[in-house]
Image (cartoon, rainbow, N blue to C red):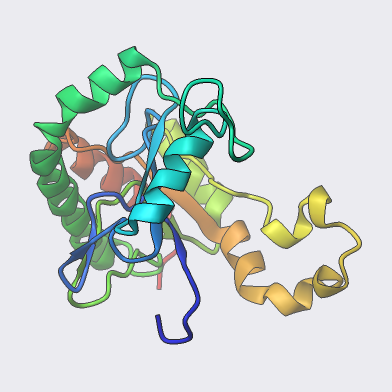
Length: 225
């Protein structure tokens, strides 16, 4: 690390992606991912994992996961009940075999979305993946100046959408009164994104016919350049 600071990586929506050839969850001191059903590698309920190459940290994480125990009824630290149940673990293990092919499918579908939308809906802002990196497109999120009209157009065509995080973090009640969040002018990018973003259907089994229908509906509601 450039400044000697430990970094905890939130890889809940990037698991399977890479940065300059290094896999998500191997980019930091501790990498964390989620196995919630909607994530790239999802179980049928709650679950998750932490990754580290530091043996001491790994041991601490294991202890915290089971009430801070290092052995039965012996608790050297405060912990939580963070164990995955057996059913969810079995589902994730079974899905690991198909995960590489699902990553490839997500990349292909995401790239096709970007090509189609850039051609047919140039007024929309599409996701950007830096050169040398790969994305698993946990969501395929675009930005539109007239989001509500575009969403209505998609809804008319029977196509679901989702607006993730419609309220910026600095406007959440938990941060009310903070001096650093006293004015929205300090968070113009967050404000703009919250007003413009929405996600299209995205999963590794989305076929080209369905994708074409989605983009057709998107084009009918998107503003002209």
